Image (cartoon, rainbow, N blue to C red; front, side, top):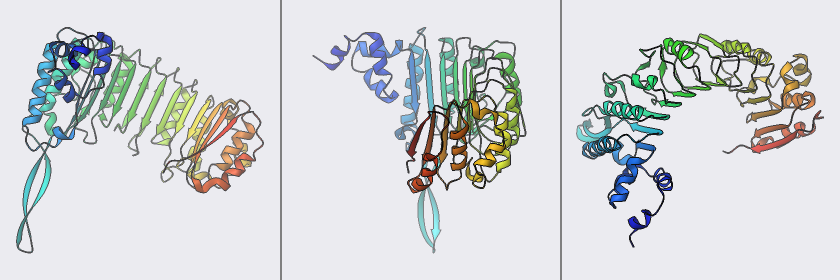
Length: 405
């Protein structure tokens, strides 16, 4: 009995689940086993085209890569009208090795340099694949496209059909560190999108895109912007519940958010504009990732005053680095309203003892606290004794975790 014959007895839904773990190159081999194995992938509702494997990213010629791309074109054309619920594409810049002549002490030598291959505009294929997925009723679309502007060519950064897809609920876009093009406002702003989750990474965003999002994405619940350039962010959303903005530079000069149902915020950017979050009166969970070289303790105090309804607070070690000179009495004098509502606190204390006094203050004044988790280094065991000696006002569980090196 052959392996292919045994697999033919497996129900389709189970077979599709098994096949979802295969790399696309392995899936092509699987299709050669039998007729059943050849037909199964074409009815799969989850497709993962990962073209980041080293064999195809740094091939000495383009032949293998083009062969795979041609196969995927054919694969999608045979998928027919079958629904594609989830579609993921990961494409890395195709590089070729070139020998470069150079002279050292009048001796001719060679060195190998990897350069982006411009023999094919691969992104145009991705655009066609995405259009097929949209026509097939895709609900989850995940694109990781690590290419430069030349390879992107005249194609739009994101096909316009994506923003006009009524079935799409989750959209994840990652364009690496090259920022090939600016993500602009879709051409049709009257369409009402059903997007519930939007995750953007490594892309420059035009302010018009946020205008479109505010007016057209009435179902949006989660918005994540990771390493995204934007001079201005203005968001109005009654459905938004979670917002994440992570960007190391302080380019953001204008930030305003009106989201009455916003509950969760993670922020690593300009703290001066973060204070506009105080308009969101239902915040329950806040993660602050400050950079001490850019923000002093006074800025942190102002931010903490803005989050009066928070129940779960996370502070990274950089946030607390500038607070070592403030003792428990000083923290008490700030009259931070949210402390009396806190139920859970995570403090990352990896440098010195900066967060000890704040931790003690919370333990001694947060009546509703259920758990405090402190991530520390092995060298801080003596410092942590002071936290253990705090007179807890609640029955909170105190958890110490040693940070991984």
